[in-house]
Image 1 (cartoon, rainbow, N blue to C red):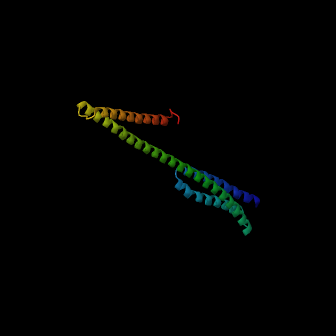
Image 2: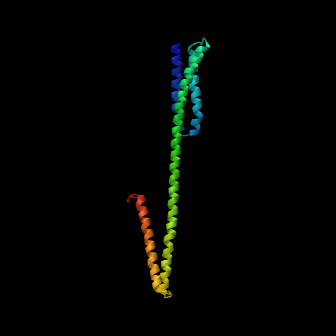
Image 3: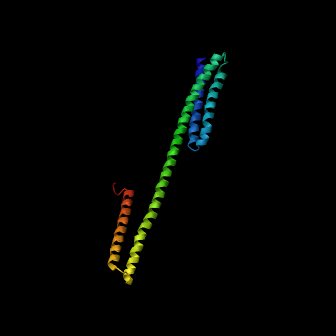
Length: 178
């Protein structure tokens, strides 16, 4: 009986390990199919142990049957646990990848917003400088000194923005430390 019990448990173990490997392979491509295959793997592993146990011996009493059932159920439970842990690990990896992609999209969106903002904030003072310079050139400026001061002030402000933008670009490229 002990030999038959060991063969029954070995059959459960071999079939279970093979099905666990197959399930994990499937999980790399489809978590849905792996989640459907996991319980089937446990049932098939358990059934193989019971079937072999029944073929190897004529079960004389309920005690032997329960012993075989208990041994194969424990092995099948362990195999199911390994499949579950492997599937959960793959799910966690896929979720981490999705989160990484989401963060990259957020960063990209932030860059686009920054460029839009910088484009607007650089064009506005440049348009003012151009208008004041044209007013000076045409001689229609009531107070030329005030126009010159405004031009210098706006040029300095624009220079600061461009300098900040360049510093940001150097930070992002890693050429400058924080």
